[in-house]
Amino acid sequence: MNIAVTGICGFVGSELALQLAHRIDGARVAGVDNFSRPGSETTRGRLKAAGIVVKYGDIRCASDLDVLGSADWVIDAAAQPSVLAGIDGRTSSRQTVEHNLAGTLNVLEFCKQRGAGLVLLSTSRVYSINSLNTLPLLVDGNAFVPDRSAAWPCGASPMGVAEEFSTSAPVSLYGATKVASEVMAREYGTAFGLPIVIDRCGVLAGGGQFGTAEQGIFSYWVRAWASGRSLTYLGFDGTGRQVRDALHPADLCALIERQIASGSAAGGTWNVGGGVANAMSLAQLSEWCAERFGPRTVRTDGSARKYDVPWLAMDHARATETFGWRPARGVAGVLDEIADHARLNPEWLSLTEPF
Image 1 (tube, rainbow, N blue to C red):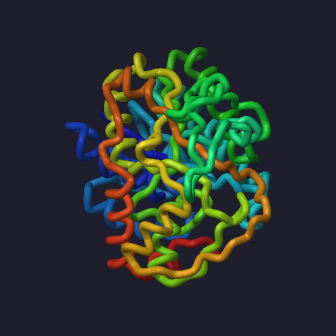
Image 2 (image 1 turned 90 degrees about the vertical axis):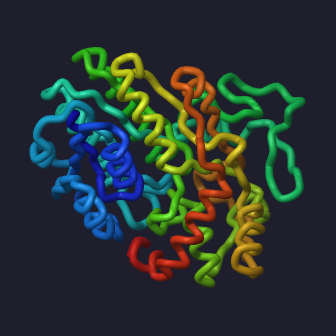
């Protein structure tokens, strides 16, 4: 089986490539990357040592994908992955759309020409910000928690946000490009008979994650705490009560392996996240860091920040029921891995954070 991975030298792309090459007998894994992300060069050696072919390719240029040759499945892990993409001063709105939507269209054309299946890595940030901001929540110590006595909207419950939850705008420029990519992927699948799998991922976290808070808050917070960098609770009265769930890419790969094995039967949209069992607030994360590295002061800034939400955990019940899948790594183990990697690689933030 030939598996192609776009964005193969990113954190998620490289982890998936290594895991799939190990898990699937006889798999030939190859991929492209445009090496625009600081730190992406650091993963090339690991991939090469595992026999994985890595070539330069920017998915915004359709002909760059031709270097991949044939493929049975494509894992689309290339994106501007920050919810602030297009407004953060580092990337333009046009670049965000070109990377995350036009690039996906080129990948879909590649799949059409080869009859390949597609696993599109989407995001929890396709869900409506206004709807997320009105979920019934309570304050329990230093975290927002679900109000179990309240009525919950369609697609949400105290167990998290499910696939049926609203994707109405606003969802951010990033989220909008992913919603549009999902729609186009489903249409290509129907029009050309392609197996299309859409995995809406929560916060992915692990030892080798690159250094930006917007896409990897667990990894960034642990590394910044360990290195003595200043940290600030933003929004929500500066309390750090906002909650997200963590998922290790090895658990994502375990699901993708089952989806590929299921072929067209795996087609559809799936929520993939750590769930409420692996969710914690920033303040709770700070408590973990204080126990691991020692206490320090976190600044507070209660000013509202665009696109922030108070509580977002992924309800993965549909994937669990269909594939018998659930995350195997708890959030404590994920944090331990990040901390160990930070100890061995104290320069990692400087190598991988945007200029």
